[in-house]
Length: 345
Image (cartoon, rainbow, N blue to C red):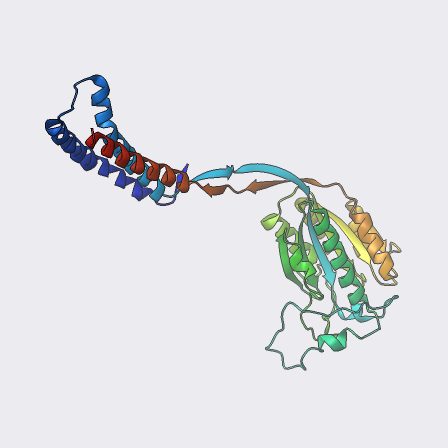
């Protein structure tokens, strides 16, 4: 049992003066009573008011200390889940047209850099009416659909998000609150590249790249032994040979499973260094030419085996002071009634 106001238990010490006064009253009653009998039963009845008052005081002190009992004990359980980091290429080349029709969606950016002297962002109502589908639009829609699917399945996944051009930015840390990703239509800040996207693409030729950042974040925040990095990119950046060696070591050390989803014409043919890096470490490369292809790629990745994640269930408490208070009131009533009976003898 847990007490919210444990210091109130000291009120139980009031039983000392209660017993002392009750004993004095009993002696006075005995000396003045004409019908007093010295039998054991009579003596027992004479002590009842004192007993009732004493118990009532103790129970009152317990009630005022506000006791609680645990309903759910703290437990450690496991759920099946994975640590997944989505790395989204938002370089200028991702503004190229993409096959499909753009969804009518309001773009709710996560933040706006007010220090830039560029024109304000396009009004969401106006942006939602644009029919041309870009690579970046299709990629973001696919990410939202993937996150929503993981949320509905409630498998305990932790999902994080990195956006990268020439440098990576952690847009959302690994977290089970996947709703924070699905609540936003856009994950990107305003950039200085074409159509306010980023500038250039860097997979790691200049440190850090998205793979470096993902490995560091897995080490800092990872919960599962299954670590998945999904890179959405057009792949238009060749990785230097020495950088390939370095990134291979990063992937091995972080124990990452890497997948690449290509949204450009060049990726998917096995010619780009990003594809070779992925396949060298047991990953797969998918080529998505349409929005439907993107969704299918995520469905295939979704079939990965998951691993157990420890989850702690907090203890919940239920107040029970009213039981002690009710018992104390009943004892006060019994004490008064028994006292009146004794006096009327």
